[in-house]
Amino acid sequence: MTTLRVVVDQMVASVPGGIGRYTEELTREVIATAPRNCDVEGIISKVPDDRFAEVLASLPGLTRLERVALPRRELALAWQFGALTGSSRGMVHATSLLAPLRRIDRANTVGQQVAVTIHDVVPWTHPETLTPRGVAWHRSMARRARRYADAIVVPTHAVANQLREFIDFGDRVRVIGGAVSSSLAIPADADVRAKALGLPAEYLLTVGTLEPRKGLSALIAALARPGVPDIPLLIAGPKGWGEVDVDTVAREAGLAEGRVRTLGFLSDTDLALVMDRATAFVFPSIAEGFGLPVIEALHFGTPVIHSDSPALVEVASDAGITVARNDPDGYPERLAEAITRVLTDTELRANLAVRGLDRSRAFSWRDSAEKVWQLHADI
Image: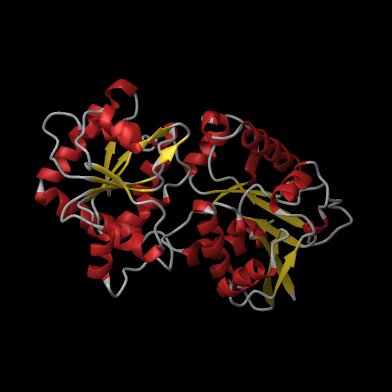
């Protein structure tokens, strides 16, 4: 029996985020697509029994879930310095840079391999959006991966190209993207939930925080430009970031109270509902590795406006309206023009909906999982 051991620890991070969703969905499908005489185990940090049981329940078919002796933060430090790497035995697939990387005697060891995943180049291009500790950890683990990893998984060709500017992995890089979550489904009581969420008849939607990399301040400023239709912007995400908050940014932009509203954390069903009913989805992010929210919006046939971040252009292809990020001072104006164009052109919105639905079908977790199995067969 051949065993693939997946590091699923991102599922128990304090904020799992997009990587947590990626980990759960990919691992679930890796289990489902396991070739004959192959099974899948999980690797997780030291967590309470109830959390351990939750992870097991969310990954049906997992043969075993190994609980390492250290909690997540301490485990990350141990693996950063090459300690406690006994979990590296056999075939290991890490869904992030959190991986038990160590030197392996290839000449005298059979079946030992480790693949790690690098989701973006933000630690190099936008370090100010991470903590200094986070930047140091990611860069350190990337250097360990250059020395010891057998393969480097990235979500887009854009990330593969950008990564070459900072660290050389040679021919070990493979592109394996994500897809729409299987749990992102409109609830049966959609109208009741829409009322509870206070969804207006028409609204713009975006996802993210006020951190500079996400471009939300530029989007809010765009709404204040002359001629932009007066419909609200809903933000699926927290109200603030650092010392700034959405209400203050909106007020300073000259927008009326209530024009911009945060929804906070949303369940998968509520997020599906909010995306499905949005008049348009705007994703102004300055830097992304994949841009899963864009695929999710396309999946619901919601017209998408996005920045020209290379990963977003690659993922959306011609299914969305692309806005150039160059000349930051002019970015809000260009966003305003794109928003006005989409909101005032019914035919364009209908065309974008069709193109979006078609484009979203190009991504599936099954395809991603099969690429993982093929990757480990090729190493």
